[in-house]
Image 1 (cartoon, rainbow, N blue to C red):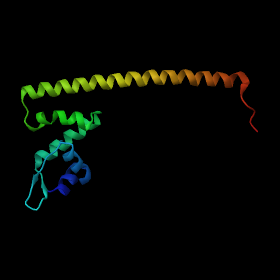
Image 2: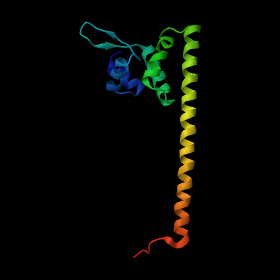
Image 3: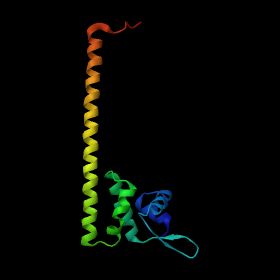
Image 4: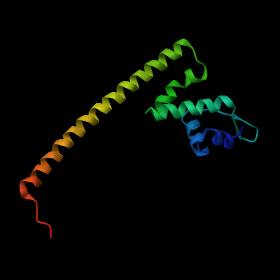
Length: 125
């Protein structure tokens, strides 16, 4: 299939599919005319890439896992699992930092609300 059909089957734009190729996430066979050609395995690969992106992984990290996607093996699966666990830990840390920031903001909101409640507010016209 050509890039337009892959785009239609996956819901991913042609431009984004070319970007995936540039990032090493996807590869295609080229015809003599330079046209890209894909098969059903590429549909599955794009769906997997989209799932990893939705899980918060960057294209750089996904590229680390491409060897396991291309030719799965136990050793490649172990490396991929280690990468996913590392990313899980990174996301968990980011969530913790965001929760702390939200708590700090909640405290500032409370201070501001108490200031207004103490009748320090400017009169409204």
